[in-house]
Amino acid sequence: MKYMYSVSSRPASFWMTNPLVNFTNNVAAGGEGTGIWFIFPDEPLPPSRQFNLMQKDEAKNTMILDFYNNVGHSQGVVGISGKIQICSKI
Image (cartoon, rainbow, N blue to C red; front, side, top):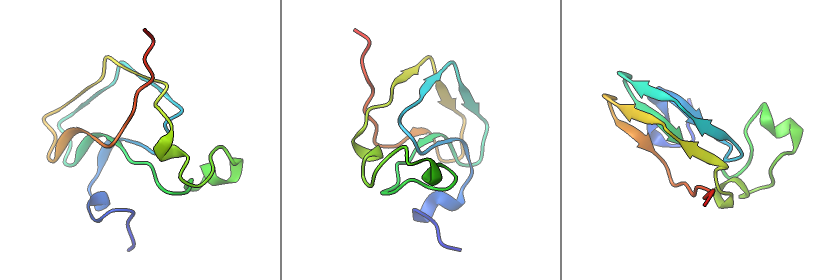
């Protein structure tokens, strides 16, 4: 089986592939893999690909709309993972 990354065979509680989200008030606890994993592929993955929401490499260079009051703990790998930029509401 081909994976995006070698560790993507491990489960994640939340697996976010699009930064255009309001991600608030979530808890990821007690899982085997990563709690909250932000992983932005070079190109959109199915089923999102059919909607043409993002172009190639756009997800990596787009800030997450909102990330507030989220917790990731007691995971087998890590609580929160990924290279992310978050829009500030200040």
